[in-house]
Image (cartoon, rainbow, N blue to C red):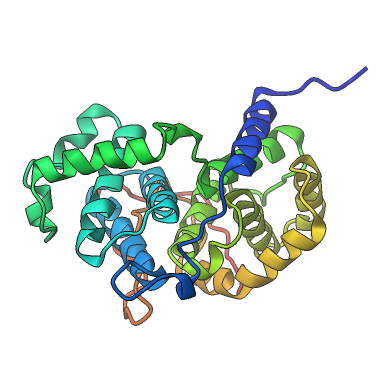
Length: 293
């Protein structure tokens, strides 16, 4: 008798199929970009800016991941001049917020948002750009699966199948938030974006499970088989992000919490961890799990 396939696995396979259909991102080949158009380092600046916007509005992490993925998808098919980049990025942020947040949470996106963020475009410009972005992406915005989408699916499947076991006192939600926070700076670095979202997500999960001392190898091998991912491909991605992930994990210690603000510090920032808003407070009386670099 064949084992029953869960809805999480069906959604996961659909997401993999959509990922395989997507064209390879080309914006990161700096040799193909002239000085008058946006290049990979400009993209990184905008990804970090989108992270700060998400943090400023106290939006969910999904908004940052969605906005960066929309920006990457648009830049992969369109050459954008420097003076239009912030308008495009802010438009992607608008779209992501509408997709991921509830209507009442969008009240902080005022009509004067463009002026507040120093973007030289009007509200009508953003509306026109919103239509352009959606048209260029064939209005298939939900079909762009982010690394965070895959991370949530990997995590849920591992928990449901019992292959992903966590230390006592650490819930699956708390662990997922931590891995997502550590993965966020990685998507803001173009050098890691040569890897598909699913591979980045599984490599990040592998890095974290190894750091907290779980039986990470069995978990990763089971999820890798489910994703039909070649071992060599995953190993290359894991090796590429492992050192960076470990340094990020130290900056975001794995403590028991409800949520954390979304922020990617610049490399020369002195304060790595921003102070969370008052409403995002830690849960007390539950032991924290220490992450070793």
